[in-house]
Image (cartoon, rainbow, N blue to C red; front, side, top):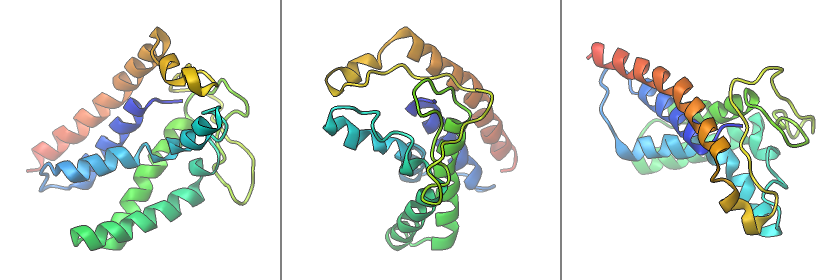
Length: 181
């Protein structure tokens, strides 16, 4: 499954794509998109405090239903705070959230159950692509060594693959935006 680096790059691609021909950097919006592309992995936190960070990973936060609910709630808050159109923002936030689900779907999963609960709460089935575009992340199942376990050569290679795949896409989007100015 992709790392926060891969998910953040996907968020940056969607941020750049959203801004249209009058593209200007809005650091707060960029941060929102990059954070939003990582929100599904907050499911590590309850497991972390219970002693096993992987306990709830790829469950309900990795579902289309959850993506829809969170996107609407944040879209409403965003429209109130930033005085922007709620429906349009909710849709782009949903797409950004869903980018996480897509990247994870296309990632290698080495822990059972394999995949993610894309259609929760309607089914508890897990779904994963039959081929992996992205590598897996090696991590411990115990909270006391979880963070330390993330720093290894395998995970560095995983991040390099994500950068190699997603950076050219980002550069293409940014170049297209630059040419349309």
